[in-house]
Image (cartoon, rainbow, N blue to C red):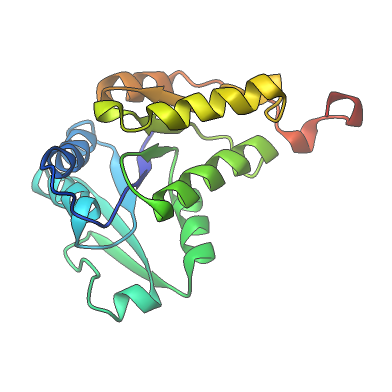
Length: 193
């Protein structure tokens, strides 16, 4: 994995562990010579991821929609900063430039990015690993919900391991490195669906 898209919040929670985690994620990726592709912002967890990677000498590619760039939240310290027309183009660029996806704590936008990466993997728009860093138990309920969707039958057996999760970044990166792509829906026959 040469580059990973990092999905995370632009907010700064009161609990300092979240900013510290984001900084460590960026730093660790850089130390492993993995480039960071992220939302291009300078605030919250986004800014901390970029700062950690940049201070460790890593490549940081930011992708920010015009509306956010124009509101002066863009991080011009990035190795490269792309301004795009909107969120759809932003997420397509994440996919085009990355060899996988790591989601750390965040809010609605972060969830949108995670679920789209999972959906696109299930369909066959990409075959990259989709990782979820469950630091501090932040995503316990989301992991349980994903399991429930599979148990009820809304996630096919072939796709039940798309979401890779771990409580530490080193464990998550190891799992992602050994990910074996599944059979996407686009390659399945009607009787398999």
